[in-house]
Image 1: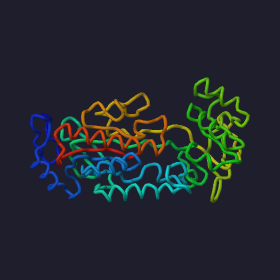
Image 2: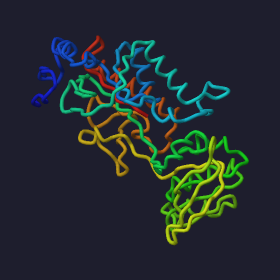
Image 3: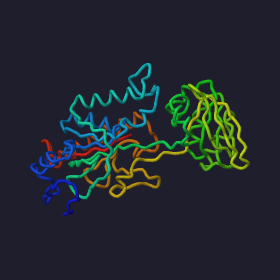
Image 4: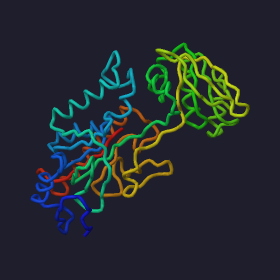
Length: 355
């Protein structure tokens, strides 16, 4: 039996690893802010994966709690026009789409808290999570915390996101038809993005800090053979230019220090992603890139903890695939709870999702 963690309401764990209903009710009643408590499913995160999981879980009468994060909505909150999500003929704004996801989940009874998860304990059921000073217990957890694009950290880069600055060629390449764009990076992601963008742009300039790419030989050969792609070696971006939209970038030669301006209508960052897995790394498996590992679609190595969305998917990274993952995780959690004899309302099912 795992000893209680300091600061968490005492919950008795019976031999089969589940909490008694009385203990769960006590946890709800004694949460310091009145926000914590127990749920059949707790979903941490509020991107397409997390909120789709919440919709499905709520419709299954699992009464999920969603720990949405201090900045809810995932990466679509910094995406302007979304034209590749099914059902929106004229496209939709990213924040508007996520607001609709959220309202739909709330309509079916999902309880959404805009707090970050600080710590978890998956050593026994009910699983335990802490967020903003409140404690939560769950019978099952869905982790869908997503991944964050890496940025250069420039003020104007931040100011012009969605107005020429992007981290997703698949999402935004269409808007640059007939224009010139620049791609920052030297790995396979940058080479793939640059090649994809040649479908729309008249010219694609690759900006790389070194004198050779780090990507695979086949991707290098494909990009360098494309007549629309040119490369500026030993160049780092030190500023993004433009008032309302991107008009160019200021570059510094990494060998000579000389600065030049490159005109461009768009700037695509392809320097990698960071999966939001820090709080789970002591409990769940991660791969060599830091993404969570899944087995049989959504299962983690811990029975009752499920994974959905970009927190494990570094191949597709699309809103529609993340949403599909959220659906699968919620269905898997529901079936798992039924197999545990939890077809009636039970304490503690946690779904963690922020993609």
